[in-house]
Amino acid sequence: MAALVSSTLPRGAIAAASLLACRRPPLPGSLWGRRFPAVSFPALQLHTASGAMRASQEDFERAKVQVKHLKEDPGNEVKLKLYALFKQATEGQCTSPKPGMLDFVNKAKWDAWNALGSLPKDTARQNYVDLVASLVSSQSLNQEKTSASDKKSEYENLVVTREGNITQILLNRPTKKNAINVKMYNEIMLALEAAGKDDSSLTVITGNGDYYSSGNDLTEFMSVQPNEIEKKIQDASVLLRKFVDHFIDFPKPLVAVVNGSAVGISVTLLALFDLVYATDKATFHTPFTELGQSPEACSSYTFPKIMGPVKAAEMLIFGRKLTAQEACARGLVTEVFPDSTFQKEVWTRLKAYSQLPPKTMMVSKQLIRSFEKETLHRINVEECAVLRERWVSEDCLNALVNFMNRKSKL
Image (cartoon, rainbow, N blue to C red; front, top):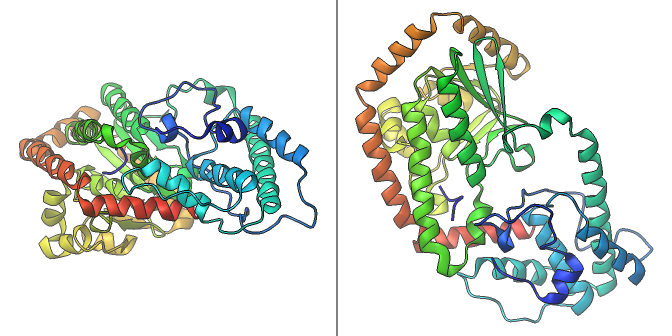
């Protein structure tokens, strides 16, 4: 887990790019003192002009005002682009000294600006104006699509619904590939607590969009100041342990409907579910070593138990990405369905299961789990302790810096 681990901009950049001008109150542990869900604009190229005409200074000033009045946070990647383009448009090529490796935020901003090279000021100004125009247009469209029911939801990153005897928890950050941030961790725990107490027979977790979940939101790790690292790591370890405990202790049959690619903790948790159904387009990836980290969610115990130590090592140590068919053959997935009929077939099956006597299903699950529950809790504690050490290791720090560098160049 790497999602849990602010810096101020120059006054001119704050006034112009309005990187701190947001309507919601700041949350701890986020870039520049805020949490910003990332948004990608692949069509915007920072090194090319948008057309023959150049944006005037008046257009540039108007764009700065528009940024101040955005009602939604544009995301870390876009904010880095705004910062870089503003600096390039007003000061030209980056000549400032490179910040230290542990100064994640300022290093990310420096890298974003430096990546523009010798891009002319007028081209940077044009790209800044174009980017702001895209943000304004996109947010206007999103606001039109927001329904009253969405606004009343008690969850920011989930959609929890009830159909018959089935409670569904939908991971709902599709623009972030359902990456799990601190807020989402807490919301999932709350949703599981509520589902465990309601009168439904089954609880289903699935994802909205093309991804089941891309794992932890690593951008949150990059926002931590050096003097806050120790506390953030301790908080992250406690949160992770509590989160996994909720899956170990969940009293009812728990089903994963894996609608797309799964990465990191969204994969390791699957061994704690009672059924795992996957589309044939799904993939399963645990790139822990690549990120300087170690297994979590009891996978150091459950994976060798399910698929044998050699196959488990291939995934957990060497980061082998599995297809849905391979994951099924190894026992991590219960059954794979064609993507074209995935939802229909899975929900037909689940609706039939939901008619079984609920109390009997609950008693049976708890009986099966009781023989190893104490072991799972112990392993969860041990894995979290190892991760605390990994999060301050050179391997992990280098991996996170490389990750942020890649993100800033997108």
